[in-house]
Length: 100
Length: 100
DNA sequence: ACATAACGCAACCTCCTGGTTGCATTTAAT
DNA sequence: ATTAAATGCAACCAGGAGGTTGCGTTATGT
Image (cartoon, rainbow over all chains, first blue to last red; front, side, top):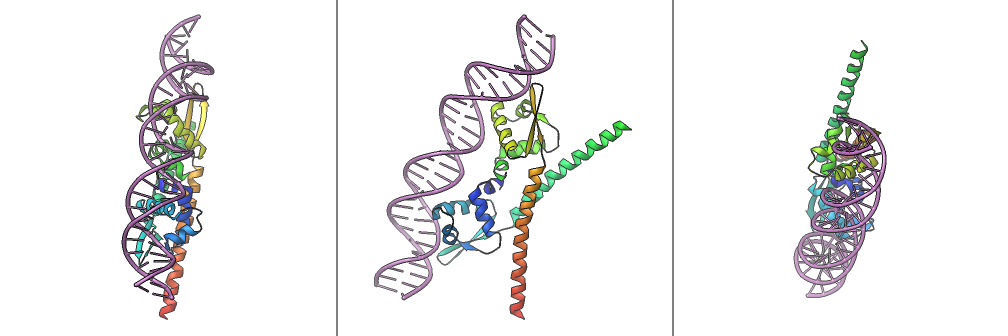
């Protein structure tokens, strides 16, 4: 999932979809100075990472933002930050014990 | 920075360093079923992304967790989630207006 | 019915990435 | 002084990622 957002093109597409509005592949590839096929591949990657959902309607397939994996990423970062801070706390109390 | 955490090996290294303790390259590569050089490259990438800091001490170079970029990533995800939710709110109020 | 728009699939190409090996260099240990 | 540990640098290699092109297929619109 970090890998999916790691590519700048993909991050841009993801960012565009973050307003919740579904968009078709051709709409997304119109202003992406890239082939439609390339955009399609990126959307597949984002979909595989669970960051985006696909819903075929008529002859066009609409891709839309999907917030679940995003929440998971936030949770992970929070957890890492938490570990870091608790390690700091232990260090702090150790130093204070040493001074006492 | 998402790209830096996108690689599973790098994420693992980063995760190990998240306790705040600095570790030398050879210590990190001991249990990484990989060459020391490979680990070195990964550490360089993490350092370039600002996720980790390097401090040479004697003949060994210690790499340590660096929380600043992490905070930035969290801020970005929060911002995206915020955009998403506000879009939901607008949709909700639109529907309610329609019903009234 | 026919033209066209939106898409899928597959082959292909190039370049970067993750990884290795070999050798040189600096620092510590005895 | 010598040996061994920890690292740096550079060359090299295989594979996958990002991208393109060509062609076929399914809906839409007129």
